[in-house]
Amino acid sequence: MTIHSIDKAIQVIELLTATRYGYGVLFISEQLGFSPTTTYRILQTLMRRGYVEKTENGKYRLGMRFIEIGSAILNRIDLRAEARPFMRALASEVGEFVVLGIPNGDVVVCVETATADQNIRMDIQSGTSFPLHLSAMGQCLLAFGLRSDGPSGRVHSDPSPQGSKVPIDMSESKKAEIRRQGYAVERATEGNELGFLGIAAPIFDYLNRIVASLSVIAPSARVGDDRVSQIGELVCSAAESISSRLGRSHQDAK
Image (cartoon, rainbow, N blue to C red; front, side, top):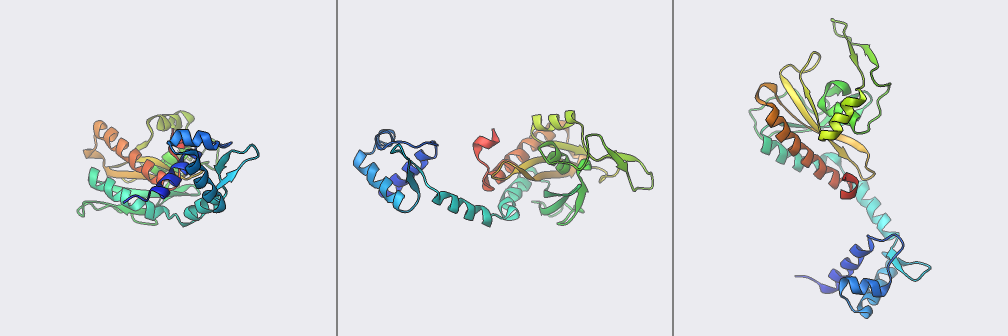
């Protein structure tokens, strides 16, 4: 059942989201097909509650009350809780292990996992961390705007017995390639879990800042190039849905 007066008020609010300087009563009436009298009454009601304000030139725009409401919603957002249903759906669709990671210094920390197949066993749980440069999740974070602690190409000594040197950041060309395709891919190499690969996409908040990455981790032997592309698209879609839940607008995503 639709309560028509409320529905009309919502239509007015949604129309006003498109303007910075406000619309007049007649313009709103014409756009929505309401009588000027009805439109005026709706606007006056919304003004009394702080949801609409009148500008100096007599036009109407959204009021500051929406900032209070928006702040309250943002303050209650729990990244893990928002991500969990999308992670479960992704794990079910691809039949692989799914990980949510957040940056912490020069590592990315796993904060949530999901799998649709209980026979899949991965030595990854909440709290597990990976070097940014050696994981798809970390590379994704770096490519989409996370600042590293050193210049591109900087190296440090690997504490492993081999004493090899590895980069703590990526080249700009690699970052550009990840941004172009929308996700990062990292196949297992020295210093990583042998025989697995990760495919990770970025998650952004309401300020369009990268705050996490979502990754599918699977045995490398059963994921060919065609399946990498397929999984990559699915990971991107799930990450975009999570970003939307964090307040990122569709306009920011373009």
